Length: 180
Image (cartoon, rainbow, N blue to C red):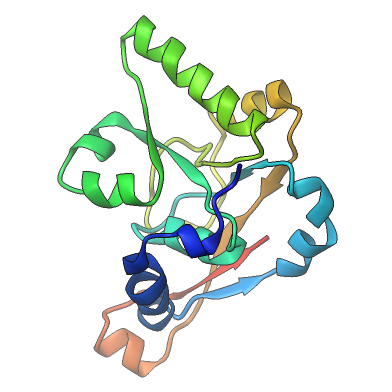
């Protein structure tokens, strides 16, 4: 079953979510689309978005709460220096050159979606900070949604000019808006 917000780790609910809003000036547009299709989405979904910032997944989690999605991530991200944080937010490592691990991985994704879970995928396959155009998608996101008969929820990050404080104090390039 999907994990509800009250089951999110306390550090995410009390520190990370509020700090990400303050620090990044996040805006979320289109939450009504999630409400409009609430019944369909209650059985699980696959979300996709461009990957434009180190914290953009936190923004996605903020947008779809109380649902707690899982995230496909490169194996080095799950086991590297950011590994504890990636695992905390539900990172699932994508296996590399290991057929047995690939079978376990595919079964895990299938079970997650069949049990009403949500999965987030960055279909472009890499992060390009503050890059506006949508790049070509790798295979995978629509495959998982199709195989599990789940809706695919498109999201995209866009930007607007930030004010003096964000530029000078936070050295932020732009304010980020998540469009659902």
